[in-house]
Length: 212
Image (tube, rainbow, N blue to C red; front, top):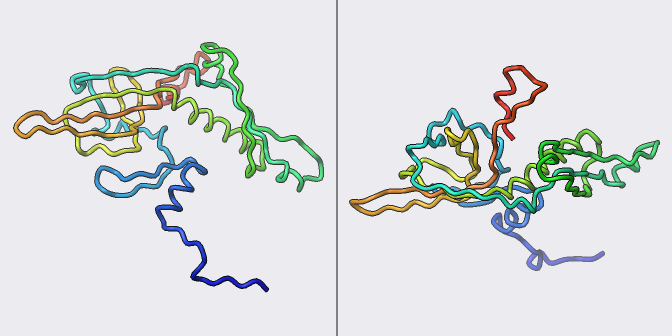
């Protein structure tokens, strides 16, 4: 049989493994402002209202700008289940997960994208994946920056809530500027705007808790 000298085997460090794995599973990998290395999924949908440090009030804002790259927004997403996963079925079914955001269709028209999946095996799971994947794709079309008085307790990878706009923005980078005897400011690079959604068909109190 074939023998391989262990000294010739290829070993990868944890840093190399994390860096290679990050884009495949759509995780974040970075060194936080406190020096810790973070490997986690994006927390776009996290509600940070109860965390006072992540609430930004009008009087806190020294500078704010936001932009939208509407050309990259998609409004319909189809996820195809891998044919290899379907071979186990006695009856051949072309399984897909499909999601259409009607609010975005009204605003931008029908913009279709298809993704082939090698690991999904159920239609319902593929549909849920389509919803989440559309959110990730469209999140990158909203960017901005905000400058506030120094707030060292903020951490990367969490949303801030701008109270008077009633919107969440995801924090992608943090920059602190300190002048001895002078000012201390924090500038945040933002993406993934989320705003409150109201439905004319839903009069329950729960509608006030929905952001997209």
